[in-house]
Length: 219
Ligand SMILES: NC(=O)c1ccc[n+]([C@@H]2O[C@H](COP(=O)([O-])OP(=O)(O)OC[C@H]3O[C@@H](n4cnc5c(N)ncnc54)[C@H](OP(=O)(O)O)[C@@H]3O)[C@@H](O)[C@H]2O)c1
Image (cartoon, rainbow, N blue to C red; front, side, top):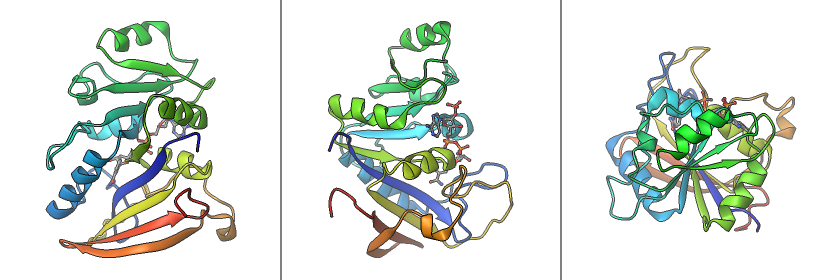
């Protein structure tokens, strides 16, 4: 395969939300957070969209498990990542994937912070091409940690092999609250990405569901 094996992981409420109307995304129970940090320690890269960086300011490091920090990859077509974002704190190798539309001054700003910049795609990051580059950079296993829009982009292009969802026993509602997958959406149910359930587990108060996508390389 010319791209990494991709695991989409998310914490979700029973009503499918990955954050509230006020973008509160602290959904996981303690045991689930441990599980997420363990997966982080087992992959070569963690990828999120710029929306998640701007709303959650995550560190994307391994703190609740033993192991090395994987490479952090931020998908950010216009280089909007703020200079004081935690992902730029140099605690792990960090790559910002951007597009040709990003301005040179922002490329210089990011590079001056010891962060690699990879440009691919005219206006938006070309995810297929990015994944090929990441594979050449030694990233064999990639954890996709959202958010909603990037999850759509990756699933729509058939770039996800496995989906792990921790369902927290809580309902928050709200039309504007982000769901697991946003984007344009499929017109018909039959067009949906087909999944095969491979694991069901209780993790603390949460319910973990693991699926393989149809045609996954590990089938
Ligand atoms: N519960 C959880 O597990 C969890 C995990 C992560 C995030 N979240 C929540 O998710 C929300 C953020 O989701 P979001 O949808 O706003 O943002 P997002 O998915 O994190 O980032 C989306 C952005 O990525 C950029 N992008 C560049 N190229 C892309 C491409 N080819 N396909 C898709 N996106 C591309 C676009 O911005 P540019 O055009 O500017 O590049 C796009 O708007 C937050 O509320 C956060 O708390 C929850």
